[in-house]
Image 1 (cartoon, rainbow, N blue to C red):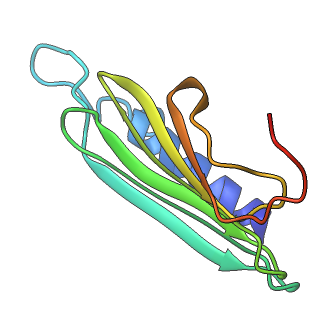
Image 2: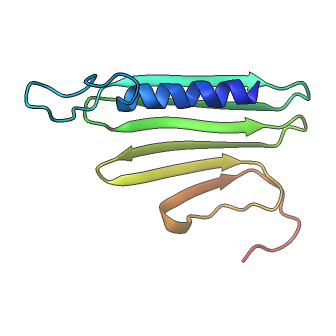
Length: 120
């Protein structure tokens, strides 16, 4: 199942980049013009683990999306992100054991995990 989703996502990415349909982008002057798109998936495997991703892009090539997982025990991680002229910026929300609230490298991590040991 995961293989089918990965292949589908690769085909969508290739099509949106113009590899499958030459000439799909570009105006009369032959330049590349970003095309708006959106895609996503959400599935649960036979063990109760869930994975998802959603992304959309506009004509300015700005991307906004999220991806994440929830395992059968309720451990979750969700990454919300924006990618634009200012770079890639992400916010992570998780309840993974051993995590703490922190902001390394312009990434915001919000943790609901119980702390069993000090995090430095």
